[in-house]
Image (cartoon, rainbow, N blue to C red):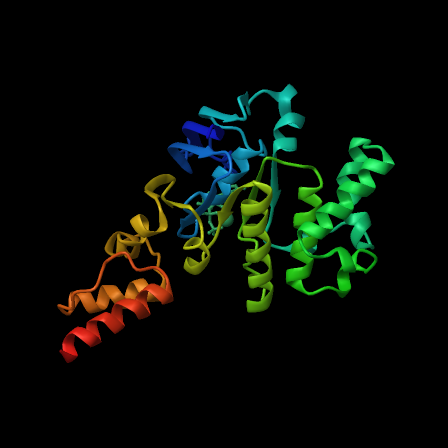
Length: 288
Ligand SMILES: Nc1ncnc2c1ncn2[C@@H]1O[C@H](COP(=O)(O)OP(=O)(O)OP(=O)(O)O)[C@@H](O)[C@H]1O
Ligand SMILES: [Mg+2]
């Protein structure tokens, strides 16, 4: 598997709004290095203000590193002339679906970016239909977006990105404003795009159960990556995660509590099924 995105020692600070000349610079990213493999599903966790959205915006050249490099599919993201090529490869989905929907009919919204690109009508029709089918919103193609639920709107926003045929989609807390049903729909859609269509997914989330579904979790704190591994490897670090203001999945927390109280249960439980299985084993053993 080759890398779709490579971040090499990326440093970034926002321009100070202060007029004082010697106002101190606040580094928001402090040497972030990260390779995202093609086809991977990576979740990014971190407390508020840790730099998740800032690094994500580097991946499709909304922001440019002050120091270090971002390489997208072999292209240097700092190259202004390659902006189109970068955006074609990496699409972004944000938290609020209402801010991302521009048209008054679902299929027109999905077609919007393609129209601007001058894609020919027959191909556009096909791409829009396929994108809507991929997110399970084809039957709603003639509906008005404002009549849809939050989860449905977010899936339309995702379809708008999919229609561009990107290699990678970066989703910045796409489920934060959704109810539990909407969250489930969007997560199912993201997983399907990854598993069936091979789209690389970078999912920024505050939900531990969503992160547990990824192939890999990257944890950020104060502009740096502090953990990077499979969900099982990352969630083992219960104390460190708590230190940086994060939780672990509820079942991991339960197993952690049991272990602390001397019960012999594995330290890498992340799903309810695993947890139930292990607890049954313990009860059976105790009954013998
Ligand atoms: N446009 C901006 N101008 C100045 N500072 C900013 C700007 N955007 C973010 N910051 C600062 O950069 C730091 C990192 O912000 P960022 O939005 O990347 O964090 P985050 O991890 O995405 O947080 P959250 O979980 O709240 O979305 C914060 O201290 C924030 O205040
Ligand atoms: Mg953010």
